[in-house]
Image (cartoon, rainbow, N blue to C red; front, side, top):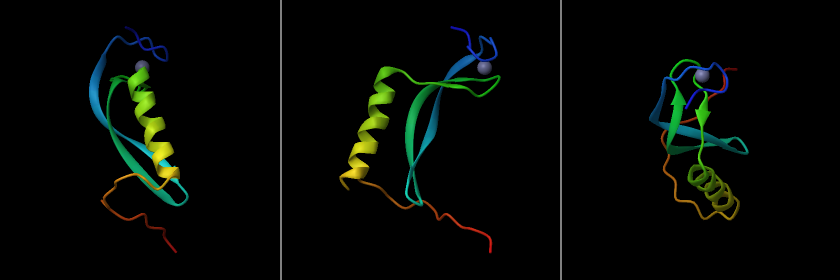
Length: 76
Ligand SMILES: [Zn+2]
């Protein structure tokens, strides 16, 4: 497989954290995806897309188990 963006064939399976925004909160979703090592483009397969959709819909229903890992801060 080649990267559609930069044509590099250096694509590897990586654990990443997808960021999903919910109001002012950001939910990190650990995912195993293919990442282009050259330009950083991420390739999501069907299972991964379903996982993200699942998290999104659980978020809406307040049915997602989460833990606080940090704070979002803003300079004043
Ligand atoms: Zn690339």
